[in-house]
Length: 577
Image (cartoon, rainbow, N blue to C red; front, side, top):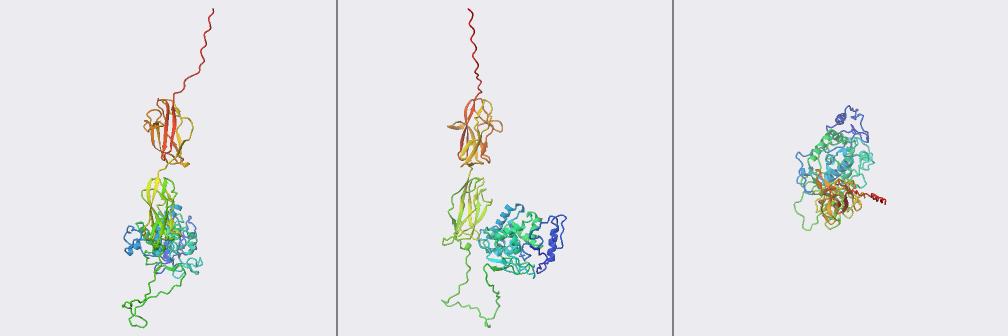
């Protein structure tokens, strides 16, 4: 996008000259010896060219933003989702459920794809607050798409930057000039290269909070900045909107959200009132075309004045028909009555393995009919290191046409035992199922020796070959399986022997049972050196694993064979007669 810096004229005291000075000052601090040109652009040798210059109009084309600062008090603890807000302050401090989910999902994706960026989800929330008041209080559907388009003013150079149409009106409906679009307020020319598909529907839509949040994350991380570093964090925010006041406002909300926030139902958030250009806020347009009507402001009138009718205090006669108040159709989320299990099989997996069965949940209305396109959150609770695929403790899924959502596969950790997975509806509080999952210990069903050399030893000596075995389970390598080795008295008596071969402990003392053994990543287990006392004979070493695999290894202690086949002595010659 061509840089537009210096062309926007804000209403009030903020001017392009002030913005340019702020950007130039920041650019000068980015690297030792860095210089800036007349427009505040860095001329440092390591400057990285991209489609959107850091010192240009940023992601939003310098569109106006909300300047309201966060409340002075610390955010209250998170209430139960769906709890009615008790005050405007609580609503302002909370983040709508789907919007919050989008921020966290985007930050998790960036942590995996660009871990060095260290993007906190609270930064996305801070920008979302300043740009659109969290999608105008969370007015989004279950897919995350705003119920009406959020548009900034047209950038026609009249009090704002001059950015002529770049998308033929595809995003902003204006084929003459561009406008910032969506909950994160991307201008179309920036969205063309920065847009992302955050909700997996195959579309990059700036009006979708999942798409816009992920795009914002990648935008902020595009220069390999480390956002845990205050200088890089400052540069990244300034690249989004080159205004020092904007940076300070975002940082205020970032700090506020880092102290804690809570989730509120979609559509119940408070929209800020103060804008950087003095207007009342971004314009909105319905998702489907409609003809806007001019606003009507009623004027006070005097009873009896021409053209006016005084309000009546007399109730209408009985039976007089009344016009019902218009009702707003219930959203899919609002129509959900309860969540129920949708045939989830028993959830069991061995430690370290993926669960073969997935959790399925059905959202139903009061009539028992499935509700499509609502988002269900799955949360792992309990003392466990199990996660969903990808390493997260929380996952979300969208219900299909029949109202069924399927959670990502569970991945067992090393902690054995049972834990719970709680299913909740995003956006409202409804009854939901709790699933029990169990992680069992690693097991083996087969043990074999890796060699076939006979294991023999002379009395008082040591065995030349070490005992090594391989464990498998259903013909696959059984790694990290617990094992025990015992020198037993006989095949019918598994008690430890008191004579014959033995191991040594760390102090050199004789031991005939080893515990705490574990197979390695290849399923192999190599036992320590074996020794023999002075008792000759044939002995058994029994190795057992979790899961019941058992192997008896024969050990022989025998003296060396010293017999020889010497020729018989010759008979004496007969004496002479």
